[in-house]
Image (cartoon, rainbow, N blue to C red; front, side, top):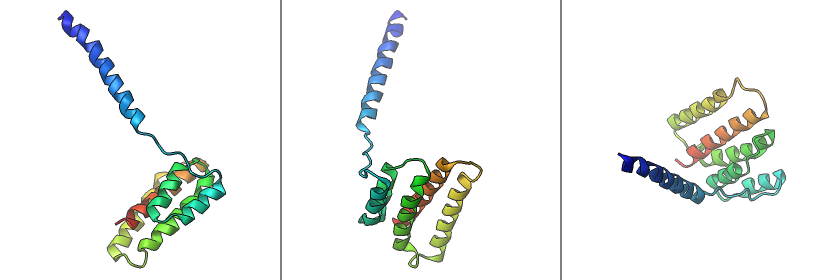
Length: 130
């Protein structure tokens, strides 16, 4: 019984060490842009919808400043499938966009405008990749 009590702390310590090591391996890349204008240029110049979305993600400010680059991602991604997609796929995209609009509809502040735009950009990127 005493041995079991002594083992538990060592198991907890080992588990915490493993968790800390795993978390240390997950490193988010930093924003490659030094300004909002540069971020917009990088999004627009990105070679793909997915890369534009990644740049936009890494440069989030959670403010109204996210609106224009997020719209640039949406525009880039939609070019990949609007006009080519089936009516069913377009309807699914429309539902996904409506979900994004509803998600933060009752929240106020530019942070929620940013969250809505990120949701819309991710929806466009998701449908671009299909």
